[in-house]
Length: 271
Picture 1 (cartoon, rainbow, N blue to C red):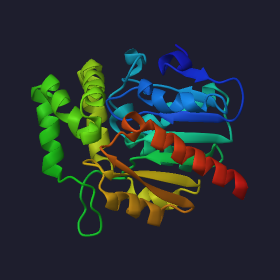
Picture 2: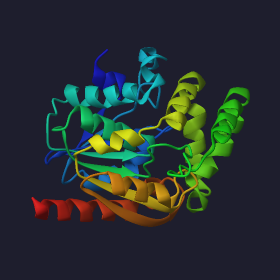
Picture 3: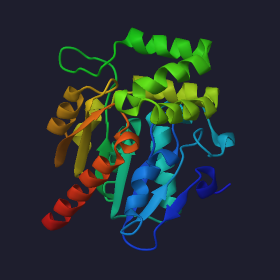
Picture 4: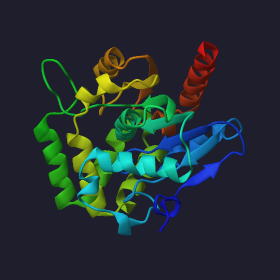
């Protein structure tokens, strides 16, 4: 089984630099369709699914490998290696994939030219008084308990929370369908890994320039998270999107596309 098949990799666009998109927990690469297609005339767009998500080969899922974010980091690096990408890549990640991209950039400092981080959070847990991640440990443990007891009920509860009021209806239903179609075993491991990861200490080692796209009203990542990351990521820019929810690439793709284009244009001028 090749990596390209294992991770359900697709490449669109015939010319230009590579732009690699990474999806969030419980999702797959189709969640990027509203944004990625807008760059297919200027970039070679790479979409993939982490093992255990979407149409990846679930036979390659390993609890130990994917019990930490390093397993997902390796998936991303494996995909880049399979495509023989060594430099000049623009990475676009959503939610937990922002941390995956940050960690990958530390492992391979020359691989990415820039990181575009939508709804990032180095830790979903509160670590008061210095950090407000949005959740107490018992909140997340309760969410995992619901997942164990009633997987469909968990999916139908979490989807509207992630979608936010701007995603009520179509986007919420799309997320719910994605959650429900994900294998419960792999989803449980990914959930544990996502919700309890703490990568705050890793931010100091990131040297790749980045754009932080923060949702204004986000139940999963409060505004303070974006500010926290901006203050600690060297060469970062912070833009607040006037969006309610955690999935602007699905609810307001035009805003995300415009923000990325502005960033790419300003970045090119500085080079």
